[in-house]
Image (cartoon, rainbow, N blue to C red; front, side):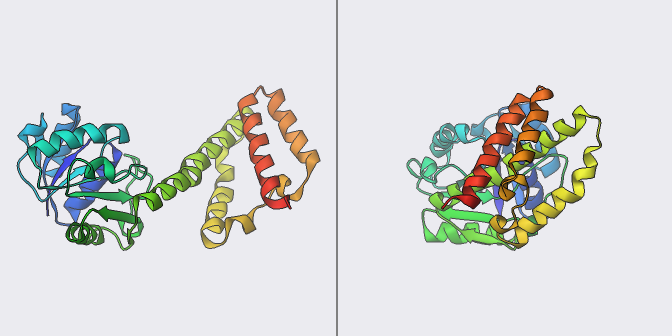
Length: 259
């Protein structure tokens, strides 16, 4: 498939790499930062464009950009290519941001956390596709199946629930890891000692119902430990961590002990 890629962030980088690796052609790349655009184009063996008007016709236009940038780009691209299938890669943005302007609209959302420093295992990464007509949905499904073994046709509402859940499962959990590191760093304790615990916790959560796997002083109702922990955080002037500790502990108690 001949593809135009808009964006120069982490999603654009990883998506471009896997598309190229699976035999698709990134014909051209555009982003606001032309220096980044040039680097991406070199890696993807494609043309770097300083403006959207430099684009040539392709089979698909992928908007791998921030949610706030999608609407304006849709308007600009529609004026240039009103008959070309256009998709965004956002988990939280409705397909209507494209479809209310552009009739051949779709979504191509990978449910994954992306970092430039780490490779992505696309075969196990869930990919969610949506389109305004059956033919385009089939095209996007075929494209997704060329990248991943886990392809789903979800609505914008379903995808939004996944994106919200992902914030809890990924972003918030990573912040908890960060807070844990702050606690041990305060006493010059090696954070890597927690690695087996972190990995086992994630493993249990993916193999069982997380609610049934809950452990710790809050689920046990051990108020002495809860009070002691909060006292330690207060003594260390880590009031932000103390507040989060209280909120999460209260949430666990409510989840497991409310009638």
